[in-house]
Amino acid sequence: MVYETKDIVDALLSNVSALNEVQSIGISGSKAIPKAGEGDIDIFIYCDVIPSFEKRQAVINQLEDRIQESKINIFEGGHWGTGDFLLINGVETWLMYFTIQDTLADVESILNGDYPDKLDNYYYPVGRIAMLRNINVLCDKSNFLGDLKKRLSSYPDKLRETLIQYHLDKLDDTEDLLRAVTRKDVLFYHFAMDLAIDNFLQALFAVNKTYFPSRKRTLNFIEGFKIKPEKCSEKLLEVVRLGGFAEGIEKSYAIWSGLVDELKELSSIQCD
Image (cartoon, rainbow, N blue to C red; front, side):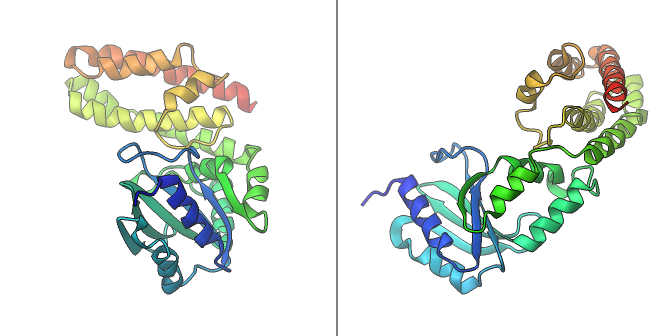
């Protein structure tokens, strides 16, 4: 018998929400269920305590032959909580369990500016805030996610000022970029410029009071920003294009320097 992916996911979510420890469930990104190869399903589960291995295994066992593969406790603790994996009609599905207490403590430290930059494996702490701000709530017994989304609807001034200052300071360190320009070293320039663009984007998002989600779809965000350097997207793309060959590196860096100077000026105006 062929089972629709949505029906299987709905059954899975029903099983998970029935656990006494579980208070809230949400899905990041679109509510639409992807097809195999189009993406995965990230399910964030918030609990009083993490359900035991046996309980989580039982939740998955209830699906019987409707799934192709499953693994329990693939990871435990850290940025992605306690994680279980299922393969549903070829769609990778992740169940990530977090305690409410740890989540609230994590949110507090991020909003306080304790983690202004990406961490290991390109995990952006502020990106977690962006996810929680926009998460699709599927179950919310105690209104934990609803209350959290309301709280995160306003971008804290302290976080904004911290991120702007941190990333603009990083942009002032041009030693590697200048060395790459002098040598016309394309690969070294690419490495140094990627780091610089990362800092530029995080500062730009903070200026616009938008939680930086990740490096995905950043051009779409920039198009919607009111505060940005003139022709920001076009110039960023030109910086990357010209930096791809030795003869273009010098011009690429000139455009880049102009973008950074303009961002600094905009930032100073906004923070006054």
